[in-house]
Length: 404
Image 1 (cartoon, rainbow, N blue to C red):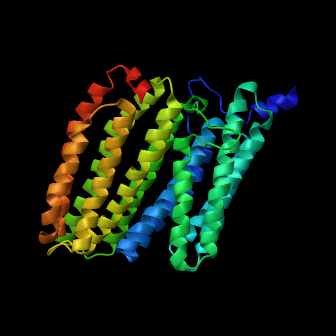
Image 2: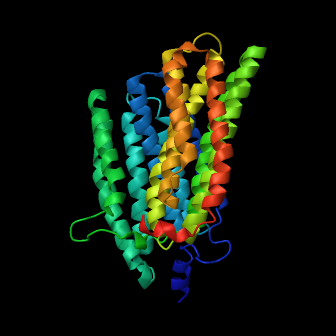
Image 3: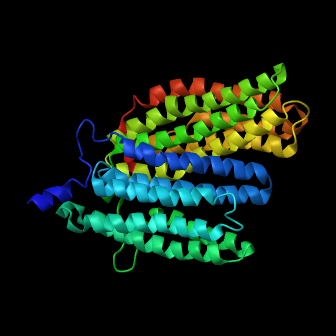
């Protein structure tokens, strides 16, 4: 009996007032991803080309995927249990190796990135299968689910490691295949021969915990924007122009925080907490669309650094594209999120995207500082309109999400 009770402590409690609370070990674990996001933005800044953008996209997808899969696992496992803490600390070590190898991931350190990534994904999933081996009867389907996940991640892991060994020209192709396998698998219910597929009802997540965890990752990404703005500004000669660029960069970050936490996060938390199938919302809305949010914030941080470096004169075509692309990705992610969780047409986000599209043809002919000011005006308009929009949506019946 004592052994069974000890095993039960490995699982997160459900239904309690603090069951969705994020633990300190989870916040400690997130520190690795602060470093990862910094590495991503700096790597793109040093290779501001089309191939650099492709590599940024791939590596951002990889970093997000290891984090969100871990968030799913810790939604079921108890982070206060000693074995789970040891798991998270071991994953931190692998995550640190993975993050440190990001700048040279397509060059000398590709094998380290591939091995660390595959070890992170496979090791965490294998541990979860092991933990669930003696779980309660109602956890049997969940264990089978993780066996399916382990099969998919083992398959993709072959491509991650093979890519690490491959020549630089082949590495990108192999890693793209690995990511396609991983990103496709949840939408297929991790279908596996003989074991079938997992219905979303098995993914009975603690909705408030999932919403808070994803919100905290958005804070991590926004924190990178703040760090870039402050670090770059501190190295410049302070003048009216540089202070204006500093203010524009900071204001844009605040606007994105306002849009997400005053509209998107509130709406998402409301609907996932009241959904009859929270696993479906967590998979479609949080797992997939938040990748666009994170990518948008990272690209925006790069745009802020370009703005601070050259605030006056006509914006370089690449710089102008980056300054507009970051907010556009961010608004697109928010729009898709709202569409999924609330089944509504989020007009504020769509209008914001259309405004950025209208600005783009003229972006290279105006100063970067003015361009950033216009982008901020778009974001602040979306945030003000979106707050009222969100408040109205949250008063609707949450059962509207049942058919998504």
